[in-house]
Image (cartoon, rainbow, N blue to C red; front, top):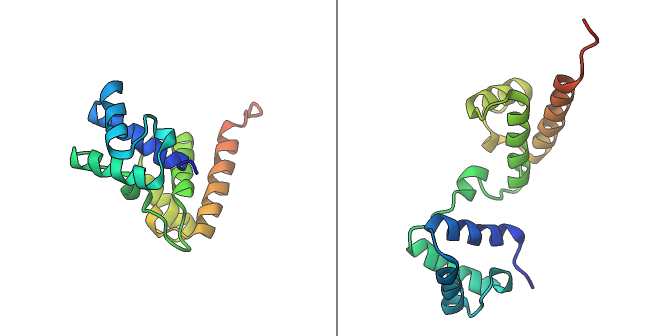
Length: 140
């Protein structure tokens, strides 16, 4: 069974972050997981390679950025989409301004407090705001 794409992405991010050339990267995969390509990793192989990358100093910010998976709360995918839509609408990557909008609109002061239901509402609201912003004016 192939690894999920997010785990493959973490492996490639670690390779880039640690500045590994292709030969060294493949040697790490072979030594720690017995494969020559990340797409052939098993879950156990992924864990072994990530232990090595972590020992070399790699630290993923995925959980810090998305708050991980929490029952009833916004999913990492929803959080990433809200941040992306906010950047499209505001033209800036301003987490404080996003928090103020969430407080006014949904009664939560930050993304980490957003339920999955409210996250869906926020996504729909941001999409509508972007559509209104992009709508050509009628010469008024």
